[in-house]
Amino acid sequence: MRRRDGFILLELLVALSISAIALSLFWKASSNRMQMLTRLEGNYALSRLTDDIAILRTANLSIGIDPSHYLPLDLKISSKEIQITSKNFKIKKVLKR
Image (cartoon, rainbow, N blue to C red; front, side, top):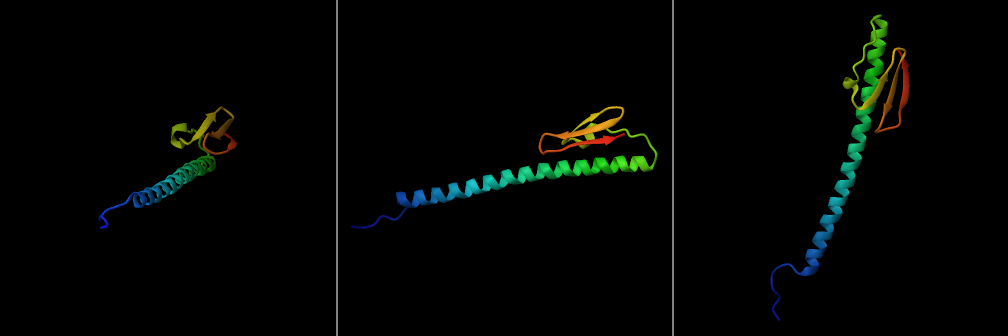
C-alpha cells in the first residue's frame, strides 16, 4: 500500500496538545505578571505618598493630598490622619497629618 502524504490524526492531536500546554503556560505567566504589576504599582504609590508627606512636613506646608494621585491606594483623609488601605494587597497604614 502507498502511504498518503499529509498529517495523520495522531500528529494533529500531538500538535494540538503541545499548543494547549504552551497556551496554558503563557496564561499562567500573564496572570502572575499582572499580580506583580499591581503590587508594584501599589508599593510605588505608597512610597510616593509617604515621601510627599515628609517633604511637605519639612517645608512646613499644609498637607493637602489628592487621593486620585495615588489611585491603587484607597485613602480616607480626616482632619487628624490619613488612613491607607488597598484592595489588591494587604496594607493598612495610618499617617498623622
